Image 1 (spheres, rainbow, N blue to C red):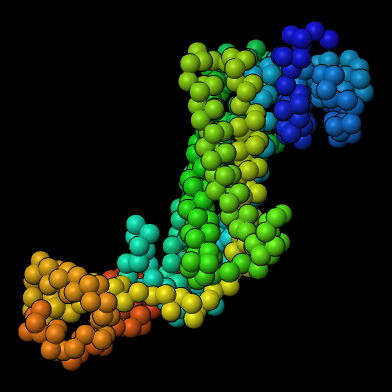
Image 2 (cartoon, rainbow, N blue to C red):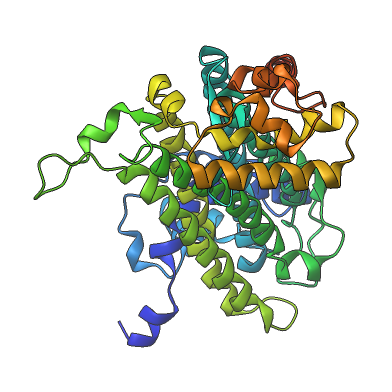
Length: 443
């Protein structure tokens, strides 16, 4: 075979569309039968043969998955199979196959996200009451319930799935019946095809149908945001499980040790999750670049959409599953968390204390800033500073200031909806369980 043939063929990368191609071909055969192109005997022969065609006949000898299925069909059915391509183009076939495959994958990923969310809720309930130092700029900021922290991932995943299902609306549009780009002279019943292939609608414009790959970009973008979020939490878990923090531990870390240093237990899976996020960003970018300069309608450049599509979707699915399975191994070191909670996390609570006593925010902030500077300079925690010294900063300080200095007091001081107050965290856990319940009822 010539080098041009090898350069042109795509069977190695589009073979994953095999089942979708078979399914679409069955539906198209039925439409040809209705249009009078196939008689009943020919239709039944094609339908029977398509059920038997599997990826087992050296598909690499064909240019692409479409020609592989068609030629294997012709080998089995002769003249009947030669009629299947009547009024049909590979331009519409590939767009149809990709959408069939992608619809199934979106549902699989959606289910995996829900499984991850169930693990999150289980962890939030199991560890309710555990308080950790919350961070901004990777510096201890204010105490928060660990359940509040982990539930933040639940809502990010919820939005991620919502974006994915929004993208599904654009995926769920049938191109088959559009021909190469101008439509077909054969009276193909596209509504029949829609019903057979379980699409919610048929495309409105044949040029648009064969030229569009934005539906792939949209799905990859939704998936990239999901993996972006998982990458950030993976980074948190890597940090929180380090010796310097020791807030959390994952059982499976012991499986990923150093080849040289016997004491090491490495966060390999979370590191790979960070890398996989970058990988899907690359797939998304590569497809943008492939498409950005192509004229309307179909161009051979679009053959290069297969790797971003398959690898991007598979990477996302495997990453979400790996994250979920690691999260199931989470252990919390309550004593270490408590020991490493810095006293400065109560500074905002002292500001609020002074505001409740009648001081305006700006003065309260300035007062507590001076108090913090004194505390750090003299190395005296807030709860060890005498009341007399407190009064040097403001006469509003009373004995009740010492009631502030506990993680439990701090989280209970929060009042707003969506805050880390235990009542509101319990509320959001219940709401999350309702979301999962409603999702289960829809499946």
